[in-house]
View 1 (cartoon, chains in turn purple, yellow):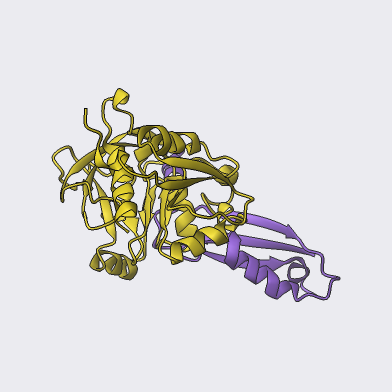
View 2 (cartoon, chains in turn red, brown):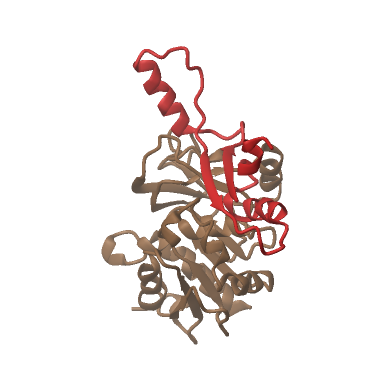
Length: 85
Length: 242
């Protein structure tokens, strides 16, 4: 099973990296881009045959390590969701 | 020549944690050991215990490559449970730079250290205004004293949500703020975009200090300005008194 964890900075957090990319895009003539926010995409390959509640565990590990809840939020997308079963 | 009070009497015992990627551990050991004349020992990150230290330093560097977020992986190093227990029992803990980031990730200190406002790694001297002298770390300072201590970081912009920031200020947990040479706390004197120019804070109990500037790099009189030693000597005084 593949899981994709998207980690985003909360809206209140300054994102100087995104700001710099936005400025660069404007210089390139893409002035329709009003805001850029940069996050992280973390892909997990999960062994699901062990009888553990892997979704609950993925939620837990994201909260514990992958994201810092003070400044980031995360969303998890599973491969079987994408397949749309 | 009279020795400063801190050098007289039995040696205090210090531990300096070494994570893979720490790079200021030697400087911290030297500052406390050679300069301040105390007993300073390294603590490897895979240890799960230590005894009899009076104070512990989490040094600067790039623990575990600073992958994911600065300090986030070091937070789960085997030694950290012991550090947390030591801090909760009232032991003195100082996190410098990457060590500060580890302390916020651990939750021993509030807040987070995010990318510098202008996206650059900054390595230069800054001025710090001492906001409190009633802490174990600043008893040798005067209120409003300006210390000159270098910073060297990429993620040093202190952040806390507004309500928690208000609480931090109300509890007087801010110990150092970036300022100009005259001690004015201005936006121009803020190197990294830290909220309220915050450079260093303590926990509620006052025994855990996190700071982005590097006091261990300004301890040897040979380098002209031993402002950083004031912090370690204050701690030695505190340990001797207690």
